[in-house]
Image 1 (cartoon, rainbow, N blue to C red):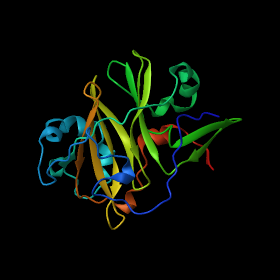
Image 2 (cartoon, rainbow, N blue to C red):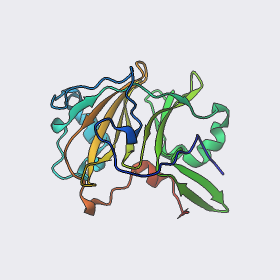
Image 3 (cartoon, rainbow, N blue to C red):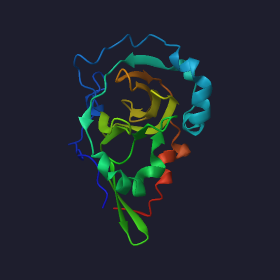
Image 4 (cartoon, one colour):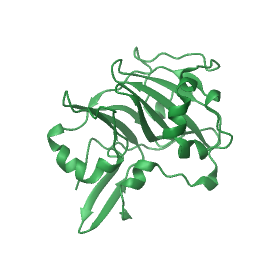
Length: 224
C-alpha cells in the first residue's frame, strides 16, 4: 500500500467562508486579507498560459472570464513535513502520472496523494478517498517534501500548472452558501513561500461532470 502524509478527517459542518477555516487558511501573521472588491491584472497577464493549460477546467464553468476574478487573500505556505524523499521510487509507481513538475523538473506539485490512498492488488489499483486534501510540494534539489496548504470538504484543488520555475497555479472550487461550486485560483511562489488567492462568482455546470486531469491519469480501477 502507498500511503503518504497524515490523513485528516473532519466532523463536517458548513464552511466559514469569511475566514476560510474549513479550507485550512489560518488567521496569523503570514496571512493578509485584502479588499474583496479589488481587481487584479496578474491573472489577465498570464491569460494565454491559463487558457492553454486549464482550458477544460475553465469550460466547466458557465460564462467563465479570467478578468472577473478578484484577489481576496495573501496566505503564506502552511509548511509541514510530508514524506521522506528516500521513498520516491515507490511513490512514483503509483502517483507519478498525476504529478505536476516545474519546467526545470526540480520540483513537483502533488494534489492527490494526501487525500487518496492507492493500493495495488494484483493488476488492479484500489483507491481509498479522504474528505480533506493537502497539496504538497517536493523540491528534488533540496530534498524537502512538505505540505503547503490544506482544504476541507467544502473546497478542493483540481489542477496544478507551472508558469515559471518558481511560480505555479492551483485551480479548484469552493462551495458557496447554496452548495454550488465556484472557481478558485491560487498563484504560488516557491521562493517567497506564499500564495495569491483569487475567487470569482461563476457556477460550475452540473452537466459538466468535470474530473481533474491528474485524477484520471491515476488509472484507478476501484474505489473503497
